Image: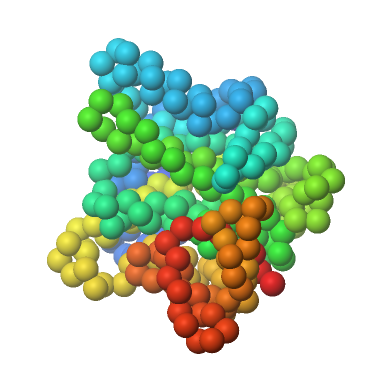
Length: 297
């Protein structure tokens, strides 16, 4: 990978390119929102090969706990490849050279209602990044990024603690220049390089992704204050997710772990205000699901 990205260059990019990109919709408020997310990339570590970003992050958090807990909010761990990458339900994540494999560690200072939306903020950031090179990239609930029915990226979020402070561990896997996949993933996986018709600059994609994460996480913090005054106001992160997703209106199989069991089939009716999914059964009953996964039929 040879990432040459530094916290200073990332900050400059965010306050120039990302700010300019967002001003059209948000005006002068864009800078306020971005500054709320500027912690992203405060520290950047680049590894050649590690088991997983979560394992490395937990090692660093454990060391901080032993030393009295002073942990850099916004730390990012990149690895050129993962030797034991895992997705949801401990599924193997194929993570060789050529992709972006990162874990972002962010302090959770959000109200509970906004904290629950972190997967949506991260998913939107990844999808926006993918759409720079594959305009038809879409989000599948909650935060899988798909290109023409094939998965190009996934997000997995866990939490950990350091003293009295809770942290989000945001794991992101984005297939960038990967061209070869294991046989079992061949029909379901793709990469940005395949969609774009050529290899991409990993540094440029990484900077773009981190800047979009800074924006969307900043938006969660900004919206905390807005919704404190009016909790019925539409949430801009969920509104953006709805525009980027193709899940609404699709017939799906639903389950808590679809490798083990399909619970039922339904049509995705709508996304609720808390990010949960409303699913309409064949008899017209609407079921609300807070967690789980879907497969398009």
